[in-house]
Amino acid sequence: MLRQWFVARAAAFCALGGLALVAGCAGPKTYGAVKFVSRPPGAEVVNLKDDTHLGMTPVLVTWEGEDGRPEYVTVEMHKAGYREEITSFWVNTRHRSRAEAEAEPQPVTVELRKRK
Image (cartoon, rainbow, N blue to C red; front, side, top):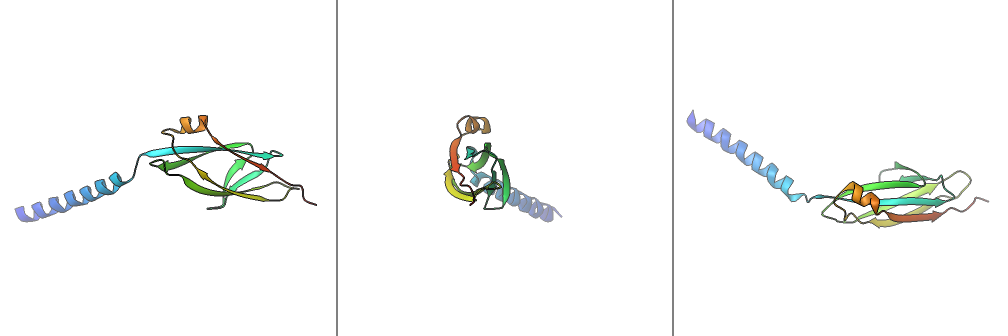
């Protein structure tokens, strides 16, 4: 009986240790922000990685990262009467808080061309 109790406790301890190790591998959360602007304004911004709607220009979008590693992003901007534009860039996630990132956003400006 004592042996079973000891084995069960040892297994639980190992499982918790494994979780702590995995959690410890993830670095601290870091943030980056991008201010999307289109000319003319009012274009929809879509993240092509997962087809998520990020907003209508002008829009401020924040990314969450780990250890300040940059993230490569590709977006499409489209507006009725204008050609779609696709642009790619690196989001620098060097800030320690969302507020800090949003205070210093990276600018991404796109000129939309009228359809003929």
